[in-house]
Image 1: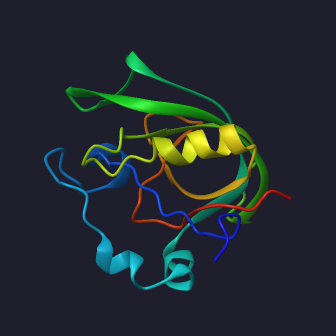
Image 2 (image 1 turned 60 degrees about the vertical axis):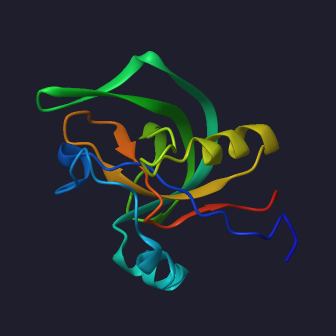
Length: 147
């Protein structure tokens, strides 16, 4: 398989208020889900978009509040080119963990920027922030070949 055609699986931590019943201490583990393939992942997804990551940032000033806790995140601005599933459009903010056991996918953000390639991401709504979505490795996520 060529690098351009390789599917890149990626991840981000789903915090309790972002993704439901995921605990802060929960380690990333979804090998069972990923082994089911793209069709199964797409079938369970609500929102999947195609677009490019146009910028990203991380640091102590990039935090997301979940109840009484605040967590540092990696945040990216994504320009949506098409809704693969759902009806999202425009520019959105996407957050993820750092990828250090928290299922974060900052590498996917970097690949989209560095290689100027579109990505397909399964997005999860962040209830406390209207135009912010989270991503994680247990979802449908790909770096696509350059058009």
